[in-house]
Image (cartoon, rainbow, N blue to C red; front, side):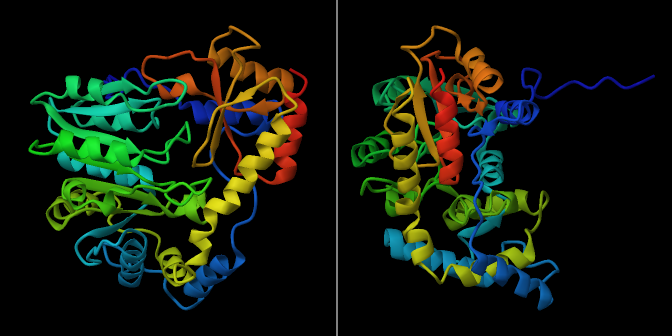
Length: 382
């Protein structure tokens, strides 16, 4: 008799990113859906990783991550946010930001707990919550500005509320939280047993001289936070799947209990290479300017189309509305763009547990200019 498997995620299928990327391959379309660059990463970083391999750094490093890498991260956090983080007991290297988020949620959640998320939301949040026997409590961001309705947050908080997930710069909207958001969040969690998971993987992809308000800057928030980052987004190496999490010592101690029985440790030569490359601070400090040029180039190219841009303050992404073109559902219209016009994107409704159908699509502009121009040329035909 073949055993019957009871799914832990019965309502989950293949992610929209895989579906749209597969359609792009099938129809030979330009893929502006999945968030990865199509340009080469820094050759100096590649050389440092090659050197690490040739120098024999190919075996396990410490479970918590290479010591020199954690020390460089601690220095970076102090420089950026004027916060002293102990490299030994507050930083853990992880195989990507998504893993860090999942491990943080697994660290804090018990059956019956509730986690407030804001939709549209990165698609890993709800499955990670539900796999831990907890319940996601989605709150819609206010369209079209994608701002947080804090009054609704206050209404949703109850004794079962265990965490709030913050994501800034926000995927998919590119929105940043503000200083006012920070102050309201402080007041909401003060005196409550609520943790915060802060998804800050796009921390350096900030545009128009705006500021990223990291939770690492605020002691009263950091004391209850797991803050998750990604080297893939910083150094254009998404396939390396390397990131890190920072948290106060007591929280990180519990995080590592789970981490040690999951991946245990991460890719060694890449940790050596990034540890050395982090000393070149201009490489991450100038990232926002570099990506803003691509955002602006894409917006200019897209101005000849009938799609209308929504404001992008950060991240890899720009949202475009097709509300003046069609009343079709977002998924249908996105599939049409692939099949009939040769460009893949992501329907924003895919980031919502209850599709909002605002007729908005997400495009990734972390591409070569020729790729962006070619996509815009095709979309002119709509």
